View 1: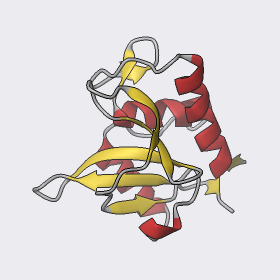
View 2: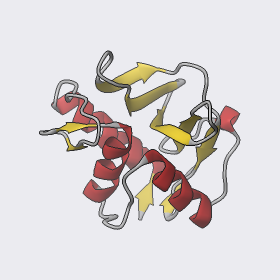
View 3: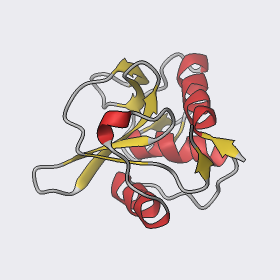
View 4: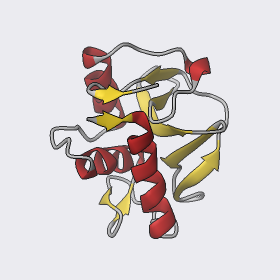
Length: 133
């Protein structure tokens, strides 16, 4: 069984071991580069979940259909945070880390790493099949 701390731990391991992998839009592996959804998908595949989708909006739909949304304020380690675009579409995803931090691919300017959490998150979900708490 996968725990929320496993999700965070795997993500922290890739950004620590790879010394901040390169950001690449559409990227799906640490060696070739990762985007925000590529990081989440890669982590889940490393944990044995091979049907996990790519694309932040696809991840949101997958998680929302199989689990409950969570209160953004709860910040459950290993759960996911999302940011919507101005048009209202899910446009970014990050993994919640302890101490109000995230593991995410923030774009070319910031790269892929462990960051102090910033504001602007609009949604949060737990991942179906992952145990939290």
